[in-house]
Amino acid sequence: MSAQPPATHRPLVNIVWFKRDLRLRDHEPLALAQQAGLPVLLLYAFEPSVMAAPQYDERHWRFVQQSLADMNRQLEQHGTEVLVFQDELLAVLAQISARFSIQTIFSHQETGLKITYDRDKAVATFCKANNIAWRESACNGVLRGLRSRKDWREHWYDFMAKPQPRVDWTKWQGVIAEDLSGFKNLTGLASPPNLNFQPGGESYAHAYLKSFLANRIQLYSKSISKPLESRRGCSRLSPYLAWGNLSVRQVYQASALSATGNDTLPTIRWKHQHAAFGSRLRWQAHFIQKFESEDRMEFENVNRGYDFLEKKTDPSLLEAWQNGRTGFPLVDACMRCLHATGWVNFRMRAMLASFLTHLLWQPWQPGAEWLAKLFLDFEPGIHYPQWQMQSGVTGINTVRIYNPVKQGQEHDPTGFFVKQWVPELRNVPENFIHEPWKMTLMEQQLYGVVIGKDYPAPVVELAAAHRHAREILWGMHGDGRVKAENGRILRQHTVPDREAWAGTKG
Ligand SMILES: Cc1cc2nc3c(=O)[nH]c(=O)nc-3n(C[C@H](O)[C@H](O)[C@H](O)COP(=O)(O)OP(=O)(O)OC[C@H]3O[C@@H](n4cnc5c(N)ncnc54)[C@H](O)[C@@H]3O)c2cc1C
Image 1 (cartoon, rainbow, N blue to C red):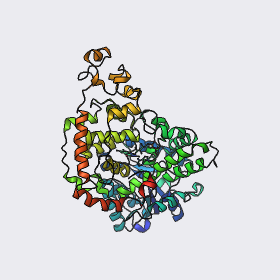
Image 2 (spheres, helix red, strand yellow; image 1 turned 90 degrees about the horizontal axis):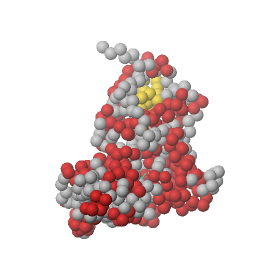
Image 3 (tube, rainbow, N blue to C red; image 1 turned 135 degrees about the horizontal axis):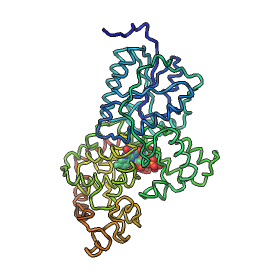
Image 4 (tube, rainbow, N blue to C red; image 1 turned 180 degrees about the vertical axis):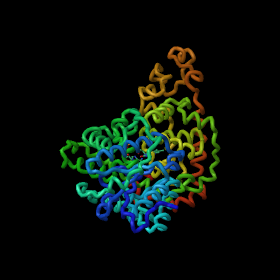
C-alpha cells in the first residue's frame, strides 16, 4: 500500500526543470513559472542513463555541479534552491507526484542526443497520463518542427532582439522547505575541481563575457586559427553556452551594446571583430537547427549517398589518434591538450576530424563520440553537423583535407604549442618541429628524441594518404546518389543566399 495522500490533499505546485540552461537570467521557463502564480519547485536531475552515454565524461558533470552550486549560492538570498536529484527524471517526477500535485512543468526545449530525445518522449507520456501540462520554451532561437529555412534568419534576429524575460525574485514563491525534506539525493557526485578546465557557473560565464568584450575581442580575428593565441583571443564562451550558463541572446545583446559604444566599454574601434564574432553566434543556432531538424546525424551520414563509401575501423589507427600518438606533432598536441583542458579552437578541431576521417580513412562516428567526451563544451547540435561537414559526407560543402604539417607551420610556426603538449619534442628545432621524422638519426639523438622509440613514427605516409582521400572524395561529389540527396539537404538545412549571410557554405 502506498502512503501517498489523495490528490485533493497534495499541495499544487509548478516545476521548473533545468537541463542545459543552468542560469537564473534570461530564462523564460523561470519567468513563466513565476507568472503562473503557484509555488515553484526548481529541479535538476543527474540521470544515470544520460551520464553513462559514451559522449559524456566526468568533466561535463563536474561543470554541471559547479553551475548548480553557483545558482544555489544566488538563490540562497531568496530563500529557495534548485533541488538536485541523482535519478532518472521519470523516477524523480514519480517521487514528487507522491507529495505534490504538479500542475505544469516549465523547461527549455533540448536539441539533444537520442537518449535525451527518448527521455523527453517518456516525460511527455508521463505528463499526459498524469494530467500535467508541459510547457517548453524555445532555446536560443532554434525552431522545433521546422520544414524550411525560408524565414529562419529573420526569426533569429527577432529572437535575439527581444527583451530578456525577468523574474522578480523579491516575489518568488518557492515550495515550502519542510515539504521538501528527504528529496535531496546526491551521493557519489562529489567531483573535485580541476584547475585545467574552465569552471562552470553563471558568475564565471559573465566574467568571461566581460573580459572578452572589454579587451580580448581585439585579438579575435588574428588569433582564431592559432592553437595557442586562440586560448586568449577567442571568447571561450562555448562551455557556458553549451550548458546554458549564458543564453546566446545575452551574449548577442552585450556584444551589440559594446560594439555601438553605448556601453562604458571602449570597444567601438573593434567593429570588424564584433562582426566576425557575431557571425559565430549565428552559426551556433544555424548548426543546432540542422540537428533539430534531422537528428539521425548522430548515427548516419546526412547525405545517404555516402553510405556507399567504404571505411573500416582500424583499432590501432583509431587508438593512436585518440591518445595523441600519431607521429604528427600538431595532431598529437591538440589531442593531448584536449585530454588535459577540454578545449581547442575551431581550426584544430576541424583538423583533428579531417585527419581521422580523410588521412587515416576512418569512419567519423567513433571520432565524433571521442571528441564529444573530451570537449567540455560538447553541444550535440553543433558537434554532429560539424562532424558531417568536416568528414565530407554532406555533399553540399567543399571537402577540406587539412595537412597537419602545413597547419603547424602556419599556425604554430615556432612549435611552442606542440612543445607544451608533446614534451618528447621539446628540444627539436623549429625547422623540424612539425616533421621530426625528417631528422637524421644523429640529429634525433642530438635533440633527445629517437623517432619510433621516444616518439611515434608517422602512422601514415602523408602524400599517399592525401591522394587516396582526395581521389575518392572528389569522385563521390559527382556520384548520382550523392547528387540526388543534395537538393533535399539544401532545402532543409540552408538559408537562402547562405554564403552571403553566414560567410560559410554551411
Ligand atoms: C569537429 C567539430 C566539432 C565541434 N564541436 C563543438 C561542440 O561540441 N560544441 C561547441 O560549442 N562547438 C563545437 N565546434 C565549433 C567551434 O569549434 C567551437 O564553438 C569554438 O571553438 C568554441 O570556442 P569559443 O567559444 O571561444 O568560440 P568563439 O569563436 O568565441 O565563438 C563564440 C560562440 O559561437 C559559436 N560558434 C563558434 N564557432 C562555431 C562554429 N564553427 N559552428 C557553430 N557554432 C560556432 C559557439 O557557441 C561559440 O561558443 C566544433 C567544431 C568542429 C570542427
